[in-house]
Image (cartoon, rainbow, N blue to C red; front, side, top):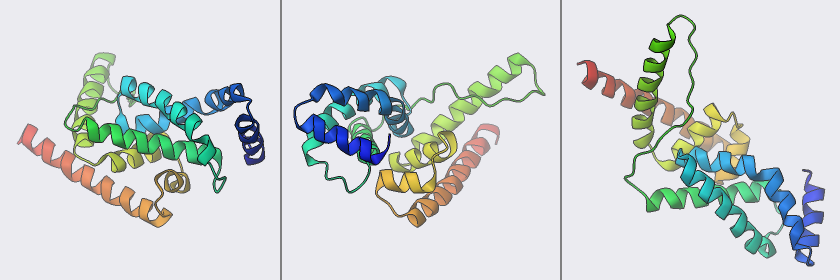
Length: 185
């Protein structure tokens, strides 16, 4: 949706056509869910927070100034709400659903075992990094968001996002290496 169309819809919603907000829900639900899942990694929690994001956005619409696109504003709400949820639930186990790493060289049974092992290791590593770093890693590598988009959502500069991605990737490698040494040591 173009910014002009977003602004027109917002004006109409503010003027009393509240049912038009459903167009935003339909348009942005998949991406809001993606932002939230990038932080939470838990499908049920992410779906609940994604719904709450639209409720909060609806009631906060009068505060939307138009400095950025509505979608960026909405993604920022989603990111902040997901981070808040993580802070509330700190210490709970994080799951990664539907991780798939294809390798045609091994049998199906070996693939399943290897994938389950990789998912467990990835979950353990993701548990040890901050929610904001987890969001950036998931957004960049899994959801293929650009550095610029991640910067807009998080409110960080692009250079800061690049540095955090690099440092987090290195840290994850170190954590994984340590876990492998403990497992096979």
